[in-house]
Length: 316
Length: 206
Image (tube, rainbow over all chains, first blue to last red; front, top):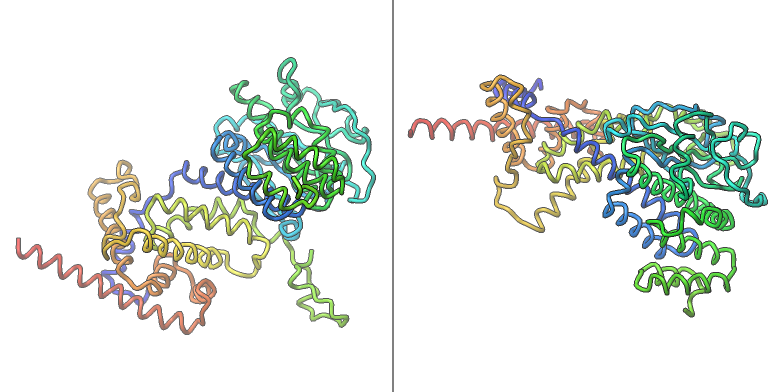
């Protein structure tokens, strides 16, 4: 401020003392919104590569709307559930317990263009309940395979097994006795929601999904976990579609039918499945799935978008 | 990992600068940028005449752009200058939209909300009142300034960016920065003195 009149300097100095910083809740809210929007855009971009730009944009918008309107996704994100990035970019082995001191979305240089998959960590300021959350990761040792690698047959999921690393598709690396292990079997009859099955060679293999295992309110925790599992699944499906691996995307969806069915994002998941079928050239199956889709959600804009993006559905 | 922009496959040995891979670890994460610079972005938006409610939207837009473009960020560049450029672009758009939607008479574009001011309860009341008045006056003067001068003034005098950083943020020559900064200071002082003279006259009439 060398060139300023002393009176102007005095005013500026006084004003600088009087300006308030943004409230912490505003900071947390903006951070959540940015991450939600980024996730929605990533989802839209993923579908863009499979069933046409318009269809995917619609899914992205739909996802974003649901995220915002329901508010549940905000809670999910606030407890830091979703974290994925391409296996090719994943480090050989992530530390089991990452620092949870902040929400971080780090888009790697190449990853942003190739996959645009953010990595989300737990923000302390976003939710008090999150402070006790434990994070579990999908086993990075599963990171392998290329798009051309044959997909293994589905196997039943076993969560919390100490010998999981020896098995080819034990995705949740849980420490015996950990809180996550306890939480992984929430209630009788309910499907385990802390993870989903993914085949090797798919984008989900080697990716990291951080899932809270302890919350103060078990009921809301269960809902959050379910939503988190859905979002995480969709994230992986989108990544697979974006990478041109429709069979992997389809496999993911089929394996995790329990998560998809009647979920908040079932419509998006079904649309992604149709998109994958189109990409695979399975026209008859795509048409049948599309018919079911349209009869179930007759007014969804996704139907029109899917038709626009997939020639096989053009006659529908 | 080599940046796509830096990879030149010409068949000839590339210049040394192109051979050096970029160390991505030098680029800060989105998380750390947000934690460190969110108040900076917020403050700058307010100083550029954005209301408190809209400042939240502006901040969101800014960080969406940061999120998207972080991989392109050159680690040698100034992060504050880079962020400033983004904030300026977003604020310009915002102000254009506001002008189009609800044109307001000059001088009323920015009504200072009480909670834009620091928490008075934690400060000496007299000093707090003085500071609050100063904030109000500063914002009104900034609002009255010509846009380009306001931007350069805020960056130089309030955010204390260096001339090269300002040049980077505003995409202009350093000499132009110095020239415009002189004009901006002159304008700021003129507005300030006019206000002071008007206040003195008003006090004299009472």
